[in-house]
Length: 482
Image (cartoon, rainbow, N blue to C red; front, side, top):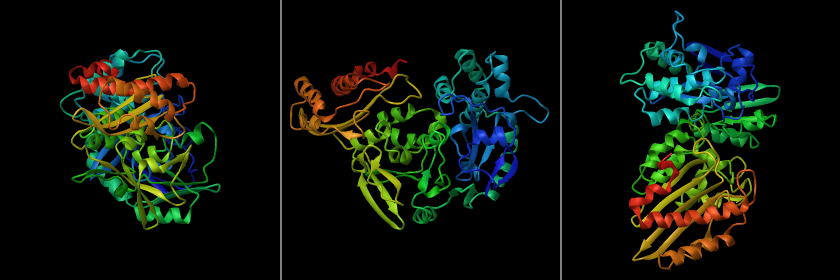
């Protein structure tokens, strides 16, 4: 059984397929059809809903794609849809009214998703500036209205004080209801399909021992595509959504320690203050709806050759802690990837945390993501560089790329052509040429192999230009002027 709040109504569900998405639950089971299906893959935002959950005793709202969210993720949370926003007297919510007043809807198909993204923004950042509005709406597409009136509508509800709506009035009541239904594991079973929602690492470890073939799901922003796009059934699911002790964010004198279940949007603060380039990449990681659910551990465990975070983690010599039952082991991230979609993870083993070394004096870190769109897009090439220069020579270098091989991979030949040599154009050119022996990229619809090879080499040259001329470094980045 799973238990959750549908707005303010406590619901208990026992006869749902664990493979059912929240979108299909809303539209086919409880006849809430205001939430629309657009792409079914988390790219358009038409299906955006908001989940309320307790974080350190406080109510936190997150916009998510309901087409990528399995119903098991609702356990212990509050689900808010576009139908829930208007007041009891049928008065429109200020966000809804703003879209009407600014003529920010034509066909209206995408409008419910925009409304829910704006609603979440009004709760989390009531005095949002234009950049924050852009970020919150980057995962919502509109093909007929045009974005200016939508942004204007969002700007109009930006104010110093939070909107006093029914959700603010009922906040304490909502907290009490969530406290009363939370804390217990959840499960679903239907037609030989099962899902489990443990609430602790110990429970998770035991479930995996008992069900070694079960698929782990955190945000599900990639795994759900197997169901929604490829129409496969996943027999056994174990959701780590409620495992709070895997959502830690801690620092020691030497390391940043992040729980594998910490959402990408929560990783930003912990990482960006130490590594601004890593923060910039996380800012461009998919959309806010995906970052609110997708996790750093999931991005690593997915073992995609074009995953954004792994090249950066490899360059930084980050480690991951793997757990099997009560036994843990810690390995470098670069040793986790064996071949395409094959990892060092053993049956019933899972990633518990990621350990990122803090910056060290003399070592400079930079990362570059190349994609066709600035926001909400997958990398064609992603490069990460950690280079130490001492007295005009390269003392050490760690360079890693995504999109250049079957796995995220170190550029060892390139590194060897840098270490011990004078930091100048001649050395850089030799190292750029050495990349040809490190990688043999493939051509696909994102980029040709020739383009990938050239742009990967150019990233190293960009690092050199930026390091040599910090005053003009800003002009080398599209994110600085778009």
